[in-house]
Length: 290
Image (cartoon, rainbow, N blue to C red):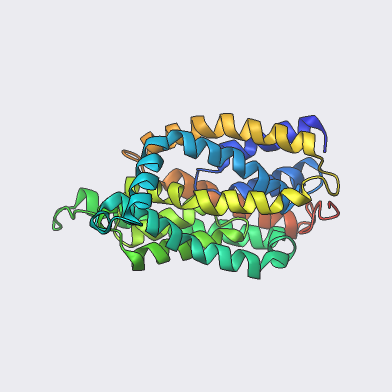
């Protein structure tokens, strides 16, 4: 991998990680369209450490408060009813599905799941799901001529059941094209949470999974055509760009619809199907990469 490739892929990772359009799919597609080797699951997992570092800094006050309350609740029973202490447990519980499924399907994640036809399918299907969830949220928020405004749930109403559902939604993002934020936010909206609550828990829930995945894949960073230097460079680029994107996105979702992302996903999926069907792109383009 050249330094230019690592710069572009780091930029793509930072731009797409927090948007509901799938960063793993865009890394895969960027390489395929450019005629580069597929950067691989290991490169994707490690560069995600950069974007998660952006989450750690952006939500540093929330994270410090949650860790402090959770730690104290281990020895102080009076703290166990504290919302922040409960959030600590809910993040742990919600991380179980992706941990178990990630290990179970590791070979599929690094192989068959990277087929461009599957990515096109997940882009479209999850785009439609996000669109439905977004419309339901908008209906509750605005009401209508014959419908009263319905108050949506905040994170203070999050329990073990919903935490696990969020977790299984996140685990779906092991398939490129699904999108970690898209799946968890859609799940949250369908369960009746506000856009801000669904997005905030989505980002917090991703921290343990992404950091663990990145550390687990460190051993493979220097294999094949991807070397340590370009990988680290891409991770730094992803961190800088990712921080700017998350700050923008958290403001965007308070007043805007997810429909632009829905339309983009569906169009991209259709275009990808056309290109693969016409033979312009091989469904396994770049798979010779290590």
